[in-house]
Image (cartoon, rainbow, N blue to C red; front, side, top):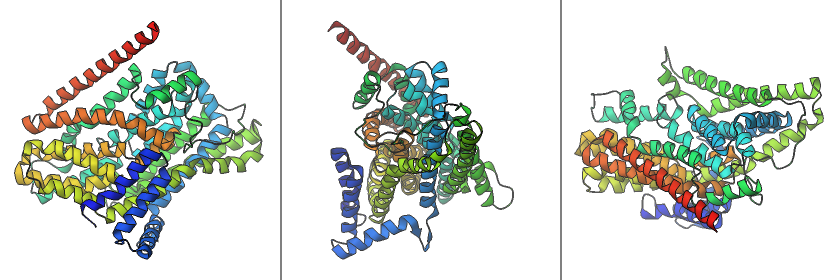
Amino acid sequence: MANTIFSLLPPLVAIAMVILTRRVLLSLGVGIVTAALLLAEFSITETFSIIFDAVKGIFVSDGELNTWNVYIILFLLVLGVITAFISISGGSRAFGEWAMKRVKTRAGAQIVGAVLGIIIFIDDYFNALAVGQISRPITDRQRVSRAKLAYLIDSTSAPVCVVSPVSSWGAYIIALIGTILAAHNVTEYTAFSAFIQMIPMNLYVWATLAIVFIVALRKVEIGPMKVHEKRAIEEGLVMDPDKPAPGELKDDLPTSSKGSVGDLVWPIVALVIGTVGSMIWTGSQAVEGNATVLQIFENTDVSKSLILGGLIGLFVTMALFLRQALVLKGIESNVFGKGVWEGIKSMLPAVYILLFAWAIVDLIGRLETGKYLAGIVESSNMSTSWLPVILFIIAGIMAFSTGTSWGSFGILLPIAGDIAAATDITLLLPAMAAVLAGAVFGDHCSPISDTTILSSTGAGCNHMDHVMTQIPYALISAGIASAGYLIIGFTGSTLFALVAVAILVIAFAFLAGNRKDAAMQEKTAS
């Protein structure tokens, strides 16, 4: 069943069920069972054994603790506790009041979230969670729905990371490019310069970032997003109260009356400095001799850095809480236990979804779903002019089906290099750029993607609400990018492609604005 058309069945079943039922854990569970049945060739006992092995692999790999997954889970729980104590110390309330005096419009609140998403480009996991913590008090006060905030976070985290050479993504991609260039004896440029040249070719990124600001400034609500924004504006409910949301504190916690903006800002600053400092430290420890910035980020241990940064942020948060409780007497110290538990509890939905997603991604990997999709591209006899757009689409399908953009990079980038080297070497960089762009697109739309899960967690938004509201915007950006890749394939000009993307983005802004104005006039007339 591996590396055949049947390998597509588990992700398709899981994704179809999650869209139809909106029950994420049930749908992922069915996908897991389906994948295990295919791997076991429908032997029931073997199926249970495979599922157990997949679950065990989340925590133990090759006889050792799977520190990547464990540290990510611990970081989520630590972040939940930090969030709870920021609220208890009065930081969230004070920051919200401070922001209300300076950010006075819904568009302004959304722009703040988008700009923060671009600025914090070191790692997409950290970006999604940190931007959510900072932006949530501002967007909540301005009645911006959590679904919109999740869209803003998701559409600025991975897109910025994938074009930033100084990021965990950039370092990983540059390392892959280096091996591809060496394999095909390409010496005209280094891996780093190839990455830099590919930045303008990553058309999905530029379309997505442009549309983020258009959506924020022109209040463009498409599809399900209209429902969430209307409820937020008219009823003041930034999320559906009947749906669970990861990262959202369930019970009202007591809040210090003497809290200040610093009670929110300093834990976040400590978190950022602690995480970035830890990334530099773990990266430099892994490199012998004098390490360059690129080598440091190529070898950094992201998950270890996250938990170290999280613990530093937690230490500062607790110090501020003790100051509120013991010095300022703004809160009772006996709330400590409740704060810890509520913080952990707020992150459990995200942890559950991640555990199921990691299990199904592991089983999909064993079924070689990605290799099957890649093989279709490699064996096809298409014209080289179609190569960039075809690779963009295939990478999108692969990342959507497997829930991993990095896995799609690892499989498809070498194949893109092989095809370009064998047909038209001038298409090598556009072909690899199309893979990067398509993988980010597919990752954006996939309900089993960890970055999508963490974006909904950071925003405190129901996971499926985020998935369903994000897809229309992602598809529009993908359509615009596809047109650009057709132009690159047939003309070889990145400039022409960028001009076409810009024209289509402007057309989207114009048409979306006109449609909104027409709707407003119709509503006024009635």
